[in-house]
Length: 290
Picture 1 (cartoon, one colour):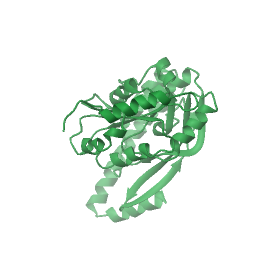
Picture 2 (cartoon, helix red, strand yellow):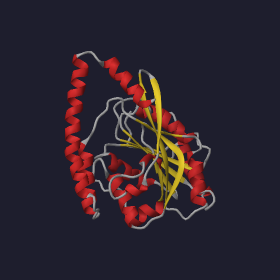
Picture 3 (cartoon, rainbow, N blue to C red):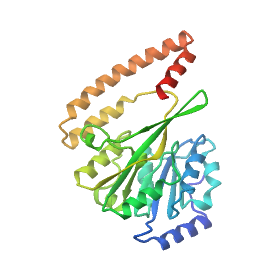
Picture 4 (cartoon, rainbow, N blue to C red):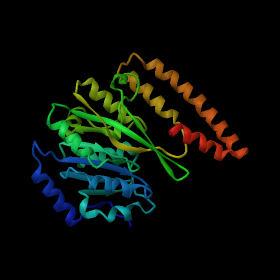
């Protein structure tokens, strides 16, 4: 299956109805999912958006020309999805920017193809936006890791006070007014891993109002293979320098620590395989996630 853009009759009608019902008390919420070869979890992600207790939702899926069964799964829900685009992109933030260009909602959320919302997530978010002057609403995130076919969950809270040191909030659990993007621009695509941090930092420096919901909003799936990408630290350093953070040298030191940690983890995983300690390592991880 190969199609640059899908927008069936039902999807077009659904989008017109969404625009017609949008008002200040019932804002249209645009949710963007970017995916590439995500057949394993994309259906759960889609269903979590379509089953929300809040109904005035525009769902946009940007696929990077997947080669697995992802598009066939998405096609099943075509009449409930406002926009589906499938074409090659130059990276995840390029794909997100494509979604932002299509979004018509007053509130925008970005949900990864491995993640999913709780059924009352959007209702909670809209309630906060409707009773405050907030530009950004963000909340807690639940990390999910599967070990030996069993799911382990751990709720984590953001810390906005870390803005000038590192990414302080969780992108999948963050919702932003469209007017914010219109004012400060979209994601800077020169950053391949940390453009969300650059964007949030720009929002912060433009004195936008953040509002925290002390509730879990999104489940974030942790890859079963633990890995560290030191490039994200390098980009973080550039972001801090660009925005004049006093903690840029602290981030630069983290780049070296990341390289050391990556080397240690490579050696550790080597010995796990050589000495047949996979079961022991799984038990260690289970204890960590309990």
